[in-house]
Image (tube, rainbow, N blue to C red):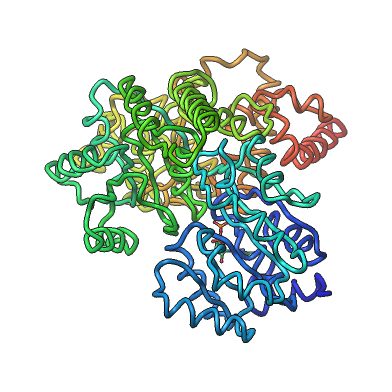
Length: 612
Ligand code: ADP
Ligand code: ZN
């Protein structure tokens, strides 16, 4: 039996990776030990490696059943790059090619064979399979076996009988990115998994900002949104082909470079559009949900849904194509009530009930309607959007505030000032470290004072550029930028502002910046000396936050918002239950960061209490 040491060595030598990611070690370990696996890991988490490593180090053949025909070829080419012998069998091969692949397979030339579920029953394949030594059967996109999910594929029901027909039962692994509890149960039952090791890594994608807009003029809202994201790569999803046509025309007429993509176009045009988008020749693609399956473009900065999709599974999968590289990215849904009848219509017409008996068809229909109801609730309800998604997928969360969705921002009275922050940063860079915070704020708010006039800065293009937002807000942004190392201050008696570590990210608009709408307005008044003390602790905690954020390559506010750190500095929690009382600290964040912050606070208290 292969060992974990071999698996580790393969990770390094074959893939060149130093460490397993979350969930990978457990998956590999179970499959290698001969235990079935049910792994639910978000897109991009690295599922392939979970079964490829066991396949490489085990003695038999691994079959990977996948519905994503377009992806198989890439997976196999990638494996060939690593000198792993692999092949795929699906309808894109001619009969002759399929026979050839099976001949080779019989001779034991492949370690890994990708196959579409529809091919399992073919005579040629069965003939091979009953004689072959198959150590593992991996079911990719395993949620397709369930009628409760959105991608039900009847051919997946053939998998369990296929496995049962093999001489020796292989180890079975089921992998998917999305599965509600009901779907998880179905996967276990319908694939006949034997007491599988369940591996669930978080669904949460902390770098994604979720937003729902309910504009009265959707075209104008979309246009604004795309202009605000100029220079970034993004996807605009529409529900219908007609909307794709109209929207791409509308954007083009307004000077936005974009391509269109839907199933009604020729293969050539679609391939061209896809390539132009993936290779960053065209920044924006307007598409139906036909676009995206098997696309792996890591630098998508925004995904806008021009219309509401039919369920949260589709929404999260499509929105999840943003920010695969871990950089901050925006997911926005433009909702209008007329999306509901359209979704209903599509549900009715997308259902191929011919293959189902009446009872099943009715059941499938009812589930689709329930999913739509949840989708509408996402668009119209109040409360944290991220929470709504996570709890929909059965991820228990006690946090009510993620701080990184439009609902949370509205609730906490924060505003997005990314663009204004960009103006501040470019001014600071233009001033080249000659002036401090006050001067920068005065220029931007358009103050006509002696110093500004004598330096000729009232002629500068940034002069008065942010006058409308008021000096207080400008200071708030500058302080936020200093706290997150976008700007830095020189040392000395008169510190000057200079560009910090993340200045470039803000300039390119990749780094969202937020401040409270009315700074200090909601804060509880506290005695002066206490305030100074908590200011000092706040600065210490901000540094800690920055260090964690850098390590995880996320913006600091994703860890904790400023409001949370301020509350923490004020309350100075000494244990976990006190920490949980801090505004913005829920159990998830408690688990992730609580102890680290508690330790820092206790050091601080030790120092000040001993000193005082
Ligand atoms: P999924 O199938 O879960 O969407 P993939 O298997 O395609 O994800 O992996 C996503 C990316 O992450 C790939 O580029 C892969 O090479 C990379 N990756 C996977 N595991 C690791 C690891 N342990 N360390 C670094 N990169 C990894
Ligand atoms: Zn939220």
